[in-house]
Image (tube, rainbow, N blue to C red; front, side, top):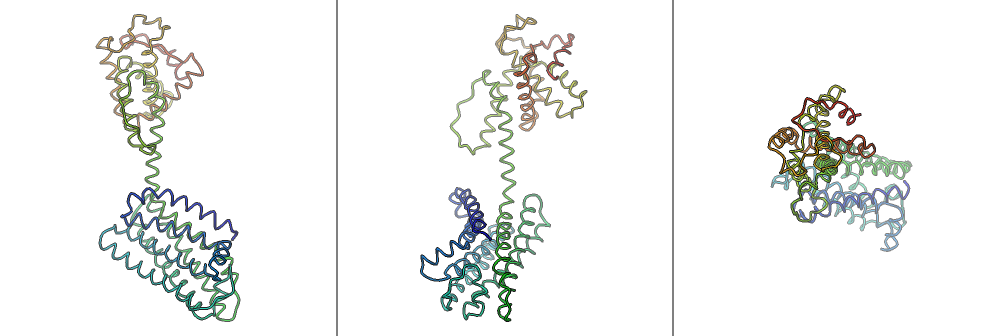
Length: 423
C-alpha cells in the first residue's frame, strides 16, 4: 500500500469523528455514543500509526526500534473491542445485562492489550522493520508469542461477529439491515487479514518464505475491512440523515411560495434558530404559508382549481400531480389578483384589500383552500414546487401572467387562459 492509502482513510475517519464530537459532548454518559466514538477514533488511529512514515517517525522520536508494532496491535485490539461493545448495545440496549456482557468482552480485549506490550518488552527486536515485522521476528522468543496473541484475538473476533451480524440482519430491515450486512463483509475481511498474516508467520516457522502475503496482501485486506466495518456502524444513522434531508428538501421547496406570500401578512417574531434546527424552521415556514393562504382566500377561485385539475387530468397527469398543479395555478392566479394590478379590465371595481371583499368570495376561497391545506407538508411541498415552476415560466413569458376571474362567473370558460397557463 502507498503512504496515501493509509492517510486518506485516516483523514476521512477523523472528519467523521469531528462530526460526532457534539453528540459525544452532549451524551458522554451514553455507552452507545462512547463506543461509536471509540470505534471511529481507533480506526483513524490504526490507519495513521500503521503508515510506514509514521512508524519511522515514532521509532525515531521514542528511540525504540519497532515500538509502533505493539502500539498498532493495541489500537486494533481496542478497535475490535469497540465493535463488540457497540454491537451488544445495538442488539440489547444499554441496560444492566447488556453493559455486563459488554464489560466481559472489554475485559478480554484489555487483557490482550496488556499482554502485547508486556511480551514486546520481554522480547528483543532491535532491527527496524517497517513492513515485515511479523514474519521477520516470527521465531523470536516473546515477540513470537506477542504475534500469536494479537493474531489469535483478531481471528477470533473476525470469526464470531459475522455470524452474529448475519443472524441479526435476518430479523431487521432498512438501514440497520444494510449496516449489518456491511459489517459481515468487514469482519470477514478482518478474519481474512489474520489468517493471511498467520499463514505467512506459520510459513516462517516451517522454514518457508511467504512474506509477500504479510507485507503486501494482508494490509490492503485489513484496510478495506476496517473501512467496511466503520461504514457498517455508520449506515444505520443513514435513516436519520435521510429524514433530515427530506425535511430540508420540503423547507427549500416551500421557499419561493413563502416569499411571494409574505406581503399578505407579516411573519410572527421568532427567535434566531440554529442552522440545524430544520424541524423547527420547517414548522415555522409551514405556519406562515398556511396563515398567508387564509389571508389570500378571497382571491382563490374554485373554478380555476377545478378547470386546471381537469385539464391536467386530460393531459395524462396522475391525480396527485394534477391536483398539485391545479392548486399551484389557483394560488398563482390569486397572488396576481391580490397585488391589485392596474391592467385588470375585467374587474376594475374589485377591491385590493381582502377584508373588503364580499363574504361569498371569502367562503368560496376557503372552500377551495380546504383540500389544499389538508395535503399537509408533503402535499404543500409538491404544490410549492409546481408554483415555483409556473412562476419561473411566467417570468420568462409575461403572457403567462393571468388576470383574476371572479368565482361568481363560471359561465365564461377561461379556456384560452388555462391554455396559456399550462402551455
